[in-house]
Length: 192
Ligand SMILES: [Fe+2]
Image 1: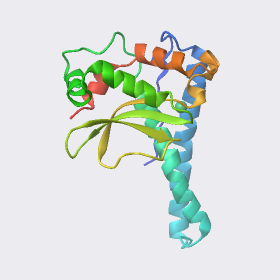
Image 2 (image 1 turned 90 degrees about the vertical axis):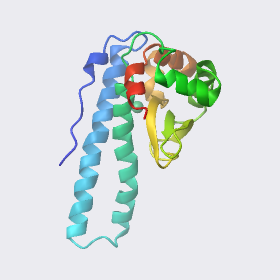
Image 3 (image 1 turned 45 degrees about the horizontal axis):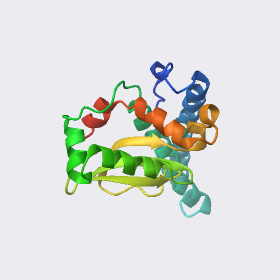
């Protein structure tokens, strides 16, 4: 069954994110959904036509990881936005952050530092399903660096398209705006 793009237009009006920026971002996201479906369909056709040894099959299969993660990471991203107010310090996510990083503030500093790294990609907070530990990771582009067997708790897009329209090169200002709009309830619900 084909993937369908979700509607995140309820995020329009968030402080620190212009309508133009968000609408452009939604359009980019829809492109990942379209291309994920296209790549999956073409791969199935090639399979049925016996073309799996062709270099085109290998290249498209590699492409799938990029398009699919481009789709799914944007869904996690838009779903962990639209909140108001900071994290509840007595909630289970803040408590877990304090346990694994020493304090919520230390986690926040560590996560922002990942987001400020040069390059295009994502800053992600994951929970290792093997031991429950929280870890921050840098994801290069959409597909490189995902930790195996870890669940995504919070994701922040730091591709230029996520902020340049509103902030130019001031990525740190975008990161501050992102933090003001985190939907902590959505992030906490992903915690096991
Ligand atoms: Fe994006």
